[in-house]
Image 1 (spheres, helix red, strand yellow):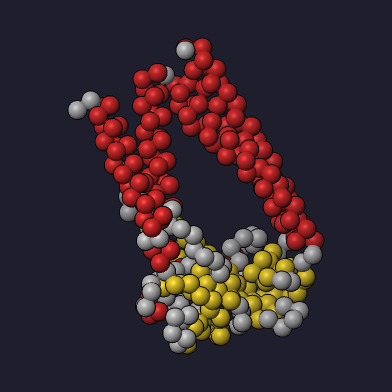
Image 2 (image 1 turned 90 degrees about the vertical axis):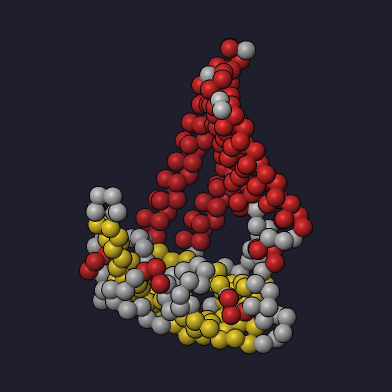
Length: 291
């Protein structure tokens, strides 16, 4: 079989998967569409044990009601229960989803949402089809097709999302200016160690856990994964926490550093869009000159 045949098989397989996925979504058969979604409420929050794994999430007890039967359930996040809960306080609302008729198979989400239409994998399959076609064109007709095929859509997507990124930056900076400041204290440092199976290299990840009480009395426990130069010695350290009054899950240790970070991100976005757009133009010129 020639390489054209392999490309055809590649596109055929992933194209079929994309069609099946989109068809299931239109019919309302995807897992995301069939799942029952409701709102849970955190009733109790446990303090993470110093030295335990950060992958476990903050231990919580959550209550929710099955919309179909009205039955009340009180559960924990022990085991594989969806998204890791990294910020918690009594009274916080989180998303709960489960297959119809199976509330015991619940999974948590930090935000309360409809869960989408289950189009993630079909869209990824469609991208793989497109990538196969671009690669085939690049092999047959030269490198300009690769630049145009990959950088063109990327540049268009960047231009489309750039205004939204700018609005997010302005919103975030305004949010930083309106943050309240309260004292906090690091109550634990979580630790995970991974060993590379190939070379045996060991890497250690440390996640400090901070506790603070908002001005309206909410006792918050949260992972603090950035902003500390020495996370290993953070336990027992007193700090000032700046948080958004309407959502304590949004907090920072250093408002100015956060503000500078958002400004740098915006510059990086603009530079990235300009770079890929320039590459797409070079590809277009190359295609045109060879045509």
